[in-house]
Length: 355
Ligand code: GLY
Image 1 (cartoon, rainbow, N blue to C red):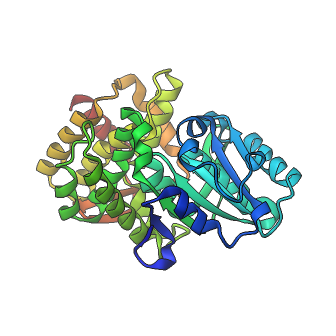
Image 2 (image 1 turned 60 degrees about the vertical axis):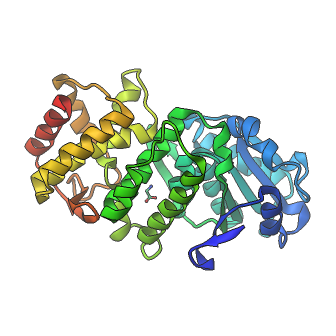
């Protein structure tokens, strides 16, 4: 395994999964190491990491999968499990799986006995380039996504793209949306390189390099702004519209994976960037058509506009009753805390609908 960036970021690219995990856990007391995973990762990814010296099967907890289980009730199960299995302040929790077990496990660990250490071993593309990096932990609450949680960095994140052997194509494409976002907010050069990559027919060696670059970009925005006061807000590009699409899709019984919703959100926020910051229209059209080709379309009608606008008003990132966007002057040149009028948002829906 080798550290990505400086050693302090504690993000490692693995070349021998079991051996690398063993190295990461060697300083923890043997009977105090626990592993959390969900049903999907237990079936497909756990066999790649287990058995592990120092962790017996009874210190492994498997939780149900899916965003609906990213809840306080599931967190309580983790606390209960840790509490009744002799976990103490010196314990370590390893979170193995996609964004859900990493977010929930990070939150459970951060709050158990006022905080124990945790390691993330993300197994999906989305979790490797986004969810497992940067210390956002938490769960959904009363219908709001990630409503309860804390900022707390994992002690280490171990990246191994061989987990993708068992990942379905839709989840690969979903994770790719966050990689696109990273490039668009960071630099023209990274975007030009990424758009050559065919995520529907991925070359896994090339993907490993692209994943490493994507993590470095995310880390650039997070490292000096863990609590999202300014620079980290760049990572919200595509997400204000995206979250509204994601909620509407769920409500209307045609759910889409997070990354797909972010891709549709990026189309809208590119157009809004044109309206508010003069982002070149030719690039809006070119990138939007590219996104449409990779992610397909999520159809909306005029009748959905009010509901989408209402959903955007619920976004956690809003302040003082204003809808907040991260927009672009140009590729690699972002601006945070940009507002828009309702008329501009409606015009944006119209652009999206007619693309
Ligand atoms: N997923 C956005 C962030 O970590 O800030």
